[in-house]
Length: 353
Image (cartoon, rainbow, N blue to C red; front, side, top):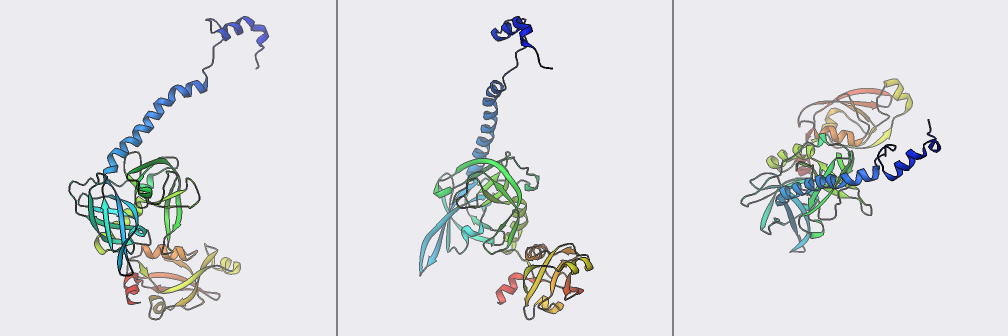
């Protein structure tokens, strides 16, 4: 019920003057926010400051030289971070790809030559190694536990400015991003922590100073739209790079394109996805040819899981053990077939070609 102020003039006067016995004066929300702001700001600032102080000594600047016309020239730079005390550094594949020499500079100005241990262009990750004393390693966090709105802190060397710290939030999760090889990288983290050329390969950190992502890309001309490879991807890829220098993926030997499936076939065969992979060619002697795949076939499932497009097949082959047979479901005209294919090592097939 609305109050008739005219019946309570004395109360109203005492309320306005702040005298005792008047109506209860509401606390201004603006004033309440002002009183809390310094405390909130201090907590936020302390978090960013503590993470920066703890992690910055582990973040490095990588200078890249490439050989051109018989001469070795400086051709770019990027960032990276030490993740083991014995000198292994994680960065982006596109930072070091095609390099003839690498030099790493620490935040204290010490400079060391580095060698490439392994790289995976498909996930845009690479490992290099330096020989240096008293290295502090940054721990990995669990990117699967990230939440949109969570504090995100980036440290790197944008445009050559050493140990630059920016902070923001996790803007979105589960983005997809094309690598330089054309393969889709899943689960990418979007953040508004400012990134610029030179930040590539630096860590994206949570409030505990754990690496939850590897900064990798920005959208030119946009503001506050930046991306990082999730730590779960790095944790999966790094052991392969340390052991083999690359990551082995299954190879079947087909080229194709994503196309819609005719509605009648969808209903008749009760297919889960409305698109599939139309086989355009089958390489001679490939696992696909040995399995009986033909041009014009449509791939619709892999081990019972829908194949809605090329990216789905690449995803399955990434996690598939080399030499382990798999059941592929195929539409050949109106008939549905089950074929057995045994993926081989994509790296070995690339070497043969």
